Structure formats: structure tokens, C-alpha cells
Amino acid sequence: MKTLRMKLVKKSYVKYFNGFSLQGEEHLFESHFSKSDTTVVGFSYGAQKAFEYVYHTKNRVDKLVLLSPAFFQTQEKSFIRAQLRYYDTGHNNYIQQFLLNTKYPSTVDISKYLQKGTKEELAFLLHYQWSEDKIKEVLDRHITIEVFLGSNDKIINIRETSHFFSMTATYIIKGAGHLLKEKA
Image 1: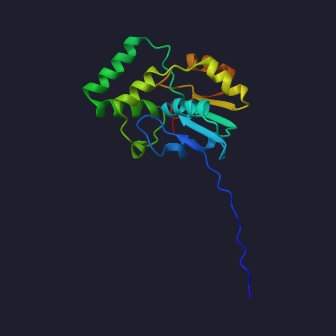
Image 2: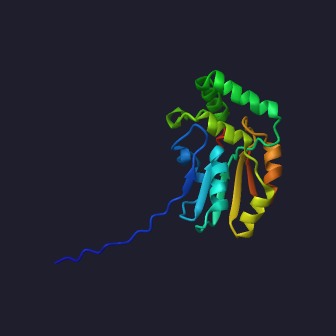
Image 3: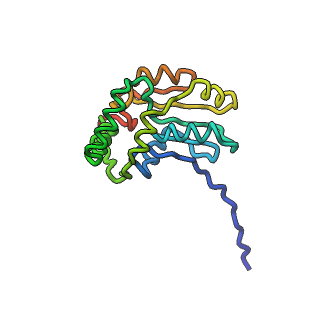
């Protein structure tokens, strides 16, 4: 009689936070992080949410990966008002243009990940204030923060963003856009 041996397999996963108007896009970024149950990852708007989760959680986190973090705190208030007005006048057109700018310069079809974002989410994204003090507190908890940016990003100002995150491990992908993909 054969004895069945059950093998206990620990499931490795990552807590992932989606970008604005997206859902299920995390596999597009798998080359930028290793799967671990102590890793938290967020893309763009999701980077803001991931950071806040890590900042407030009591759960063990070893690494926080911020993929093209949405960074608008250096923008003029008129820019933020214009974005919200444009969303109000035609949210479908706004989302389509946003997704085109997100995938630039790549030709990746991200329409299959479309999950139309709300005005409240967009307002949060645009008004969010990254805090150097909060980042230092997370780093003081021995959590590694990695930031990935594309040199050709059409959504955020790469120079200002990379300067702000200079206290973290920051990687700039040459020729890539907000989606961290290059032209195919």
C-alpha cells in the first residue's frame, strides 16, 4: 500500500495596489520585484496607497516597491484644477488619454486592465502629499523602499520625483515611460 505524502507549500504573494483606472495589471511589473508575503507593491496611484498601507500597518513588511509613484505635489494648483475639470467634462475621454500617456512609449494594450477610476480617486492622486518624514520613519523600521521610474514618463516629472525619493533605492529605466516599458 502506497503512502501519500502531503507536501505543505507556502504560498508566496505580494500585497499589490493598482494604478488609477486599472485592475489586474500587476503581472506587467513582475520583473521589478520578487514575490514574498512581506513585500508590498504599488503602481502610480497604487504607490500612494501602498505607502500609506505600509506606514500604518502593524504587519511585517520587509520591502516596499513603488512603481512610477504618482507625484504631483510640485505641480501648480491650476494644473490640478484643470485635470479635475477635464475629468468632469468627459471622464471617458480623460481616462482614454490618461491610459495613452500611461503606456507611452510602449505599445502594450492596457485596455484589458481598465477599471474606470472615480473623480474622488483622481482627486486623491493629484492632492496626495508625499512626506519625507514619513518615508524616514518607514526606513527607520528597516523596511527597504525601492522606487522604479521611467526616463520618458509622460505622467510625472521624473527629475522632481527622483530628487524627492533620493533617500530610497531609486532606479531609472532608460527609454521607459510610466508603465516602465520601452517602445517595442
